[in-house]
Length: 245
Image 1 (tube, rainbow, N blue to C red):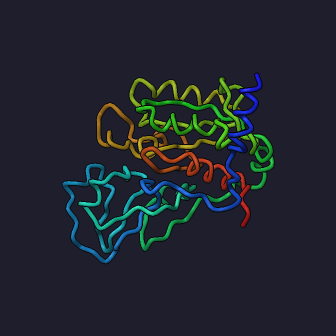
Image 2: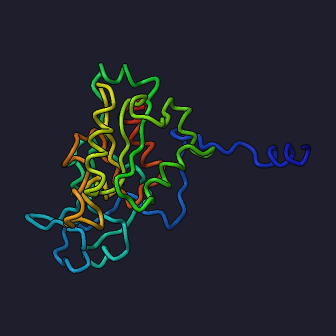
């Protein structure tokens, strides 16, 4: 027993102070991209999800971006250590001029309802479980999601909204719709990861719906493949207006 107590004391305080203070990510972390938007040297054969857009000017759809290394061969792109990428509208995922309109708070009436306690039902709609693993990590001692009043529940009947991963396969369409209908109004929907936003690497397949918002309305888009737990948490706190201005 004493060995356990001594080990716990040695471990110290493990929970991040986030959102206070700076977060130090490992060098391999792939956050919000930085792009040379003046470049015209685009090689689309390395852009398997059509994330790179070249019309009048170069832009990148963060909802389709897989945050992989191959995309660097398609356009001049580097990854920063900025984890803040969640947005409220799908069109805001179109990244140009190195500016991104981050998620805004819910309308005042809805925010009053969810501001102190938000219960979410997580739905895996055909994902590889990468995003689900990052969501699960939010519950561990490091991120400690529940300290913000946000918790996951087992039934949509007890939930205020849904957190959805995966491209929504044909077999999951009806299940997702029924789960959404089972949540009482008002409710919110959060699409986590490239698959839930646009279909991800399965984009264009006949077996998927290329994202959640083809079936149900979405209030928060969290890009990444998979997104870091702090990217998800940042989006949630912005939605609930719990970040200092």
